[in-house]
Image 1 (cartoon, helix red, strand yellow):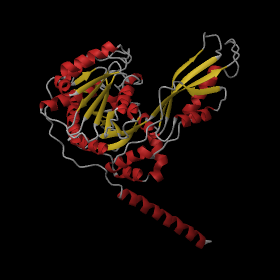
Image 2 (tube, helix red, strand yellow; image 1 turned 60 degrees about the vertical axis):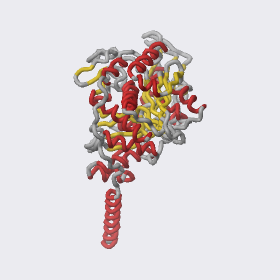
Image 3 (cartoon, rainbow, N blue to C red; image 1 turned 90 degrees about the horizontal axis):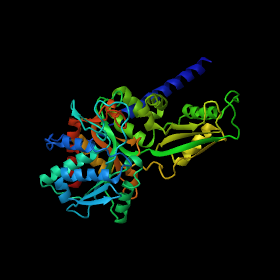
Image 4 (cartoon, helix red, strand yellow; image 1 turned 180 degrees about the vertical axis):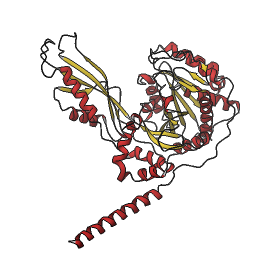
Length: 484
């Protein structure tokens, strides 16, 4: 019997030793994927740049606004950037969108396309520190709707090109700029029509850059450097309607054991209690491959050996809403309707659940999952709007010219930042360009804190003046790196 236990101990010891060797080996070979580049000089940006963005924010170009509002922005752009309008070709599309072409010397090179959008979401009724459409410059910040989403992108791109024209720079590669006017309301008349315009002329960009992720300070516990997450894909989008109809209502004084409202509440609670499965594969896995080697020893061990530590890692990431969104499909109830009086049991109850789909899943698979989790044949699950939404796109390559140019430029403008491919939880205009380009990236060149991010679609949206100047320098350098 003793020999048997000795044998078991030896097997256990050898197995443990083999596990330690494997973990140590994988950690040692878990090497950095960052590129080493020299920071560029912080040239002084054009005078009055912040004031010009302020003027743009003062025009409340709300999603769905009359075309005359976007006409005012068009006129403002012409006033602010006369060299751009004299040197670049301009197309006006869809009643408010703009498409610029800066012809390059080498016509055989595929062009680069930079995206942005002119429209903004409404401002909350909660009092702001400064009025949301005042464009106030105070405390080192520019305040207002569009400061982070997304007028700052358009104005900084235009500032960069106006600056470069003044320096007598002419690109080797053609550059296109596409500025939609209805991104916040599906992009049907803006980006969609621009994408169709490009396709009809067989214009195939080498890569596309849209808004999306940011450079974030203190983004992850254990990562000291800022994290510049370049989204190589984005989550899909769909809203489902949950409909429950009954043939009998009744008086609220004599309720049945399970009312229509109760049944719907139970269904929504089952969705909450049964989140979609988490995944550390695909782009999420790539993200950790880029970030992990830049972290401390313990984090490197865990991230280099996700095959072993994935349950612990998933549990930790699931605690934070932002981190949870990059590892699984999410489902959020956003609307609920039902009832006509407080003392009448409703016959019908309807709820809307917004689903952001992780790459690797589809609208069909998420609908099937919800139906399985709800497990109530009386509740019908259907797509709320078949014309709005879609499956997540295939990830763009990290080996492409576009990603390499972005990684280099980020290193030059954000010294020390860790660049990593990521999944954007948002749903951007870039989806309307998939038919003309397979290399689409989403990154807004701003260094923000997690607190700053709360201003997007929220209260007190703002951008620091330092950040905005850096953004102008970024686009100037990106154009130089990709169009020379």
